[in-house]
Length: 309
Length: 309
Image 1 (spheres, each protein chain N blue to C red):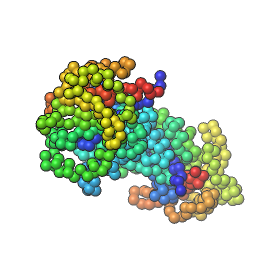
Image 2 (image 1 turned 90 degrees about the horizontal axis):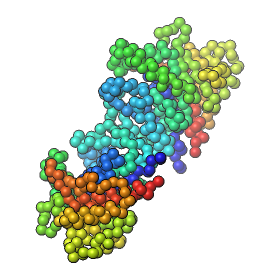
Image 3 (image 1 turned 60 degrees about the vertical axis):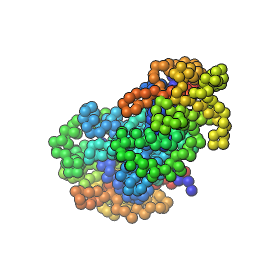
Image 4 (image 1 turned 30 degrees about the vertical axis):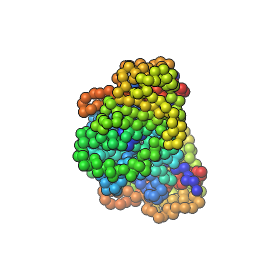
């Protein structure tokens, strides 16, 4: 049997918006052996020393081989292998390239994956991560001062320096996503960065999302507090807002996940893996809003896969 | 005006057969700004340490990303840029990849460039270098003990180890060339490695070569000693053999070169550059057989370029 065309998922968001956390869960649901994850940072044009010398941010389109990324996505989509560049975040320099053969699902996470029309056309599903800005700041501080070895001052300085570039090149990509994921802190819990975060998913009608109305109608009194769907406008256009609170009960969350899953004929058993996982230091935790976000995205990937030739 | 499709020249030959010397002269005639030279060694799959560990020779097709080379030639031919891997012969490891945009002429030199049908189809002109084996040995010893820092024993050992792989994978590519270039030493001059070498060019009718008959007929008594063309068979098929002796007079050589050139309408002035150059240590020398080989090959490249859309 001829291999099906690979399904491509693009996950775009500024630095420390949770790209890797989201994509890792999706990969676990689909099965690591069926998924290739590509970090678009690998397509940087300059290493750390050169960026400093030329005074150019890694976020800037001119600092990235956008045309080569387009070409590589095109090749992978056509079932062809690529020799992918490798940027090493530890050394700030390039390692030897890596030979990659496409698999059923290809997840591409990065800062500029929806920057050109050619790039956007490559993706079957497009997700943009847009957490509350103060929450992103907390996430970035936590990560960069622990895992990447920067001081708090360095992180703040970098954020400040990057702000105009981010605004100009990264943020405008939000409009191209099928799903916009906005985590935010519950009122009065400004210290929260984990399980109790709420999420709003902007579900654009560029994809056919599962019909949640049947599930959400019957007991609006209870569920509306933690789970709601409402029609509205985003960037001027009609969308659905799916809102999930961090304090949702496991039962309600799992019923909703079952509902999402029930739209798919068969295949993967969603309960093989614990989705919605993330780490606080070395401690593994679960977030239901995260789990539902990952599952809904996976649902779309599987749908495309089923319908692909 | 739309850019013309790039013209691709493939130069294949075993180690130390003169690939770089030939290609450097062709690049000089065409003008360095119009030429990209790619060394197919860049497409090695393993670095030096890994090749030792896996006990695999760099000459073996399995030791090279043949599929990626095919892909990259295909992209360049289509006028698209590539991110080319870079193998560093000094370190025996891979450097960061290099962004290459196609130019009018692309010269690809390597050990296995005619190994697959897909590769062969990419080239407009195919040259195979097939010097006398003892001459190649002398060239290899000279180069590898001086510029690459090996001992004589190491070079001999390497040649012995590579012989069966060379016979199996490299030599059979000879049959696919449009021009086979065989330098050889004049009888009784076994020490000769330079200007006095003779060359036989096998001119296969897969390309339309210039008509040398008018030039070669008039004074056969003098010229036949240093310059002859004769019909014959090579690998069972009809070819022309063009034989040029190293002791050819500059005047005869230059008259022949003018003849080759006269077949092209205009453009490049062949006397802008000293072709046929090579180095003995740091000393620059000229070989007329080399010059004519380079010029004839260039003639074909320019012809393809003129006729390309």
